[in-house]
Image (tube, rainbow, N blue to C red; front, side, top):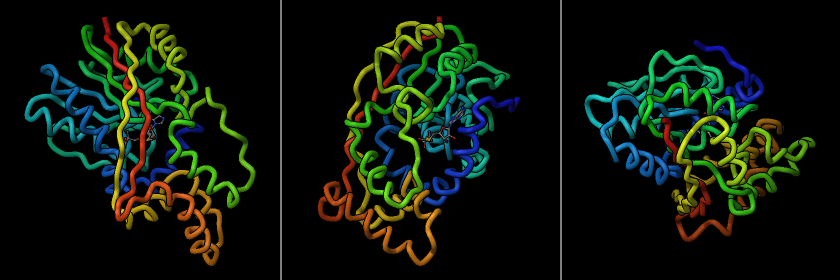
Amino acid sequence: MTSEVNSEQAEWWNAAGEGWANAQQVVDLVLRPFEELLAQKALERPRDRVLDVGCGTGAVTRAIADALGDGPECVGLDISRTMIAGAAQRGKVRFVLGDAQVHTFDETFDLVVSRFGVMFFDDPAAAFRNLLRATTPGGELCFITWRSAEENTFMTTAQRASAPFLADTPPPDPSGPGPFSLADADRTRELFEQSGWSGIVIEPVDRVCTMPEELLVPYLSNLGPISRALKAAQEADRPRIISEVRGAFDEFVHGDEVRIPAACWQITGQAL
Ligand SMILES: C[S@@+](CC[C@H](N)C(=O)[O-])C[C@H]1O[C@@H](n2cnc3c(N)ncnc32)[C@H](O)[C@@H]1O
């Protein structure tokens, strides 16, 4: 079923999906430490069926399928048509278009994972309840989400560097849908407990994500606020914008490598 309640987010991610698809290889390279973490988690026990929520173009779904080998089915669910269109199906990997908050699943899963795909619900408690309904009793969740904006300065640098080139945008509501909506661990624990999940553990996970320096501009140009600033600009102004925003990222460049400290939570829990 493809009913949808988060239509603003769907619109947002349909537009963003084009950039993500263009930059898919570099995004997957940068976020690989979290792909590896979730694939390791999948290997902790035998699995029958795994769900990847907000799977984007599906790198984590495919990595888990590869780690588990023949047998378990891996399903990626995403609200964005453009993301799902860019997700390559193969073997026992399947991608489904749907809003995780209300999607009616035809099957249940014994592991539900997400890499940065569960912070965008207008009613997170309802979404986590819906995911609990989709989980086999005894099954587990493992979600990777961002800690605060203050601890993730690469992301705040992108916001700051693009601000002069974007028409006034209201400051994001930190508790509304957005990358940092689960940053407050106490509130997040309450949300999961209210939704009926048991044994919730929220642990800090810190990784340094890397990419070759020559991929920094393609990365910035396709993702987040800088890609929106470039889209909004006249063609002739784009090279100047790119060179100005690139300068703001010097502190992350070490020789020919970009290093991005990523401050995250790993949220785990069980369905009883
Ligand atoms: C930051 S991206 C992460 C994509 C992917 N997990 C990865 O790590 O490459 C967030 C993803 O969540 C998806 N998303 C946002 N709201 C959603 C919802 N209500 N249901 C399903 N997917 C959603 C977006 O379309 C987007 O693909």
